[in-house]
Length: 99
Image: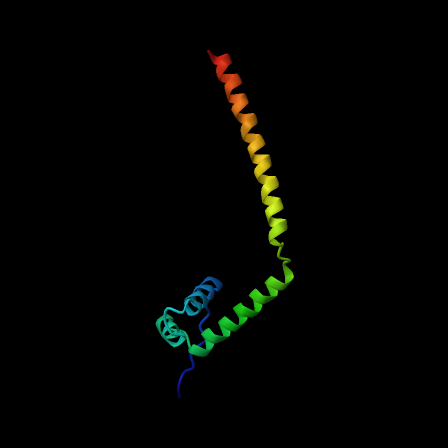
């Protein structure tokens, strides 16, 4: 009688890294699976699931237009420049008092 092995469990980090290696295109997916000791179909299933979840996440999160992003960055830049000027003046004021 042959003993059946229990299916191996891989943590999410291992799966993500395996999918990243398979997606990088530096080597064929079969080589990646063989190197990691994972069945080829298992790695393909992980890739399919990763693609499906990333497509779902992209559809769920609205992507701001470039113009809107540019406006937000300009506002933030203006605020940071103002804060920097205030800090310069405060530093000069307190440095003058220290003397």
